[in-house]
Length: 326
Image (cartoon, rainbow, N blue to C red):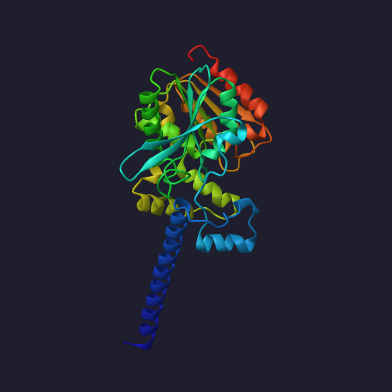
């Protein structure tokens, strides 16, 4: 073999080795990112919100993943003046859901509340208090992986839809005949929608707060928040996350679930939301075939709108729950 041919062959080998090494490195980082986004850790500080990360912190998050301490409950309904009962809802011998039941003297129905990504049932106390004041009993539920429930991971609304269905079945058995309203925030809203579309849940009405339209889009927005390109990282994270959890992340699309929801629906959105765009939420709203209302809160981002503007939140929810069908 001539010297020039040897150099050409060596260059090709080096290029191939570089491409393979880069491919393994990129996929390794995506695998780790997906794992850190879906598995909670014990204790420590949570990674700062993407918008507030410094350049060095962004690099660290990209290379090592986010840190999500397992969500716990440090407050109870007692702190907001409500009596409650802690309930264990069995799923299997190894798995259970923990919930707080808050009674009311003369009930109009029962509202089941489900938390957002990275949140436990204590994050539901603010909307729960308003709903209780409106005359509804409450069942505040920890998804599997958080709070008092079993496990320490999340599937971003896929397995959680089964948790919604199990909580509804428990409610129908224990408090038969009561109108059932479902409330979900962010991932909790996505789980409620999927429970109706895929698990056969049939509530009287639902209240959805800031649901994402597609899992891929919500992962992309986290890169947008850090001002980093999302392609192909978001796609790889969704693929590896699905592989780790045994789900198809690309098929987890609440906008498609919306087509199967025929019960009255109130959709609430904060116009400064950086996790979900107005266009995405409108797409969900447009796909809802049943009776529906859409409320946009100005000057509020992705969070608990019942905390940021409780007066308007109460007014919107009260008006919705007074419709004839309820």
